[in-house]
Image 1 (spheres, rainbow, N blue to C red):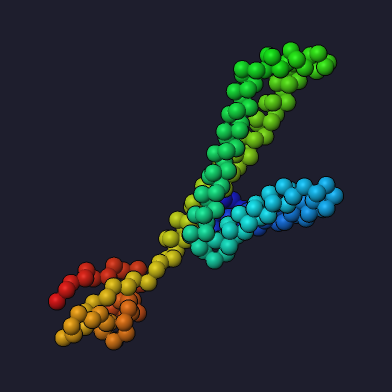
Image 2: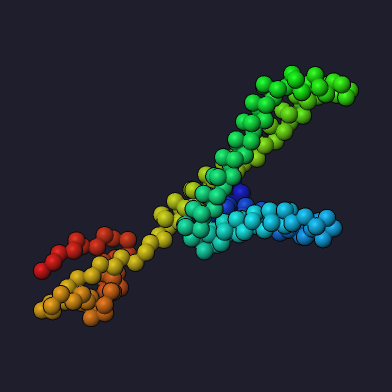
Length: 197
């Protein structure tokens, strides 16, 4: 459980609210930039990220495991692309670093400076990826926490009405009523196996 909150659900709700707020601020900046430059890419980027973090906030607030799972899937895709980008930078630095350093020396830029800048970028992006993976792990723990706290669908198992031509009704005569609603089992217990009489 994260140290900032009493539960994983509260932790992802807090993290989601922080990033949702930041992306809403980014959206305002993108709208201003679009009005000045005419480019809509910052606006669409901010809207998509704000919507993504909004899904996480909604899932944590309503304790909806499916919404958290949707956020996790999109976040995992984003982390994979980020790690591929970092790997591409590393490979380019390994194979083309000497050539790039030689070319930049003609402009008065030392080859070591290129390596230092590339390592700073790699470290920064790796830190973002690590933090994203940590949030995904906390979100997965929150899903498990919600399940353990009792987010269960009503157990519904029809059984035949005695003497009828195969019609299904509960003992109280309500079609589709569950064992829990009839008081035959306690919440969380397994229903009795269905037996056709």
